[in-house]
Amino acid sequence: MKKRLVVLTGAGISAESGLKTFRDADGLWEGYDIEEVATATAWRRNPALVQEFYNMRRKNVQEAQPNSAHLELAALEQHFDVQIITQNIDDLHERAGSSQVLHLHGEILKMRSELDEELVFPVAGDIQMGDLAPDGAQLRPHIVWFEEAVPMIEPAAALVRKADIFVVVGTSLVVYPAAGLVDFAPRHIPKFIVDKKIPYNASLPNLQTIEAPATEGIKQLTHMLESMR
Image (cartoon, rainbow, N blue to C red; front, side):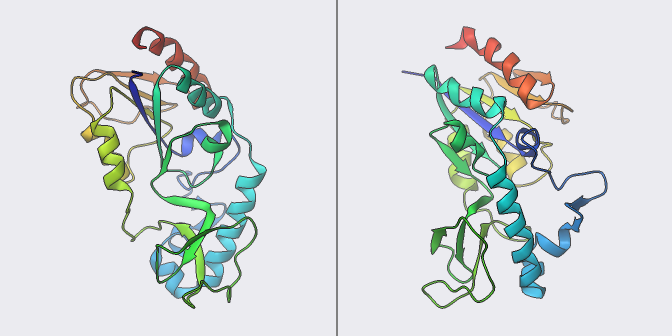
């Protein structure tokens, strides 16, 4: 039986593929105020602006390519039962070859009814205002915005509880409830944080830190995991 390696990834891993994060120093995401484009209130106030913003994000994702960190995590499936939990809305883990990926915050290449979150469909191009789901409601990005519940947090917590090894890559651990997932990892198991700026989390037992960008840090992690197969 392969050991279960649970990996929580954040924006830092996709940043190295050229996808900008909203946690830049100026508080803007691609020049947009987060409050204007990434909240449930913003959708109610100006859905056309939100739709336009995520149409651009979809194009960005389709133009981006998985980087070596994505590829090396996928390659670890040769030796471990790798479960990826990602805060990212892109599909770079899947394109790199990871077979088990749980998206906490939704997926940019899917759309759903604004009334029924179970009505989800793939989307490759733009979503236009006036494009309707089968229930007659406006289609919107299948994204979890600020102010909305995170329906996948319970399945994610269940995965972390069963981990034999737990890894955090490229996340500042400040966005909740995702940041709280570290607290579900069993105390006795090995834990690793890979980030170019290690977030403060001194309470985690059995923790090793790798302060490096994801592409460099995952190489180091792979070597460290060799003795744990």
